[in-house]
Image 1 (cartoon, rainbow, N blue to C red):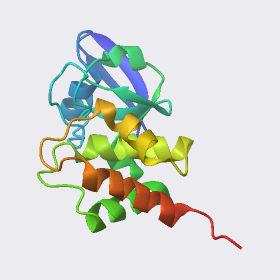
Image 2 (image 1 turned 90 degrees about the vertical axis):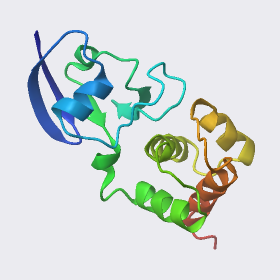
Image 3 (image 1 turned 180 degrees about the horizontal axis):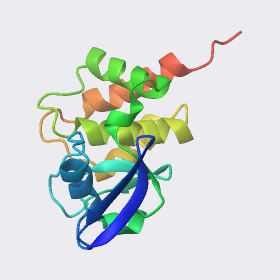
Length: 158
């Protein structure tokens, strides 16, 4: 057992955990943050995506103990974030979700993309989403939603 101390969604957390506990399991089981989904547990589907020190991370591939002292942000931690608000609204408007299993990973990936590249092309969006699997929507609605959010967030042109 190891004592893990880190910040999750702005809250200081310290817990005794098994060394082999994945960050995804820690977030879901120890912190009760169930928006972090476990799909493939091989890092291929993107459903477990979170930000660790502002870097997009597959939480199923990372041991929680590797995050000692880190700042971890899950979907639950974006409550008042204007960028995430615009994405959630656009996902709703563009019908970019169906079953919702991939949605949390898609939203976090899209937020990471728009934070780095405020006005991405469709090709850039599709490249950014390449590590996320959706079995329902066919991606067209998701790509459109990200384009829509980028447009809404663009500064007014004089």
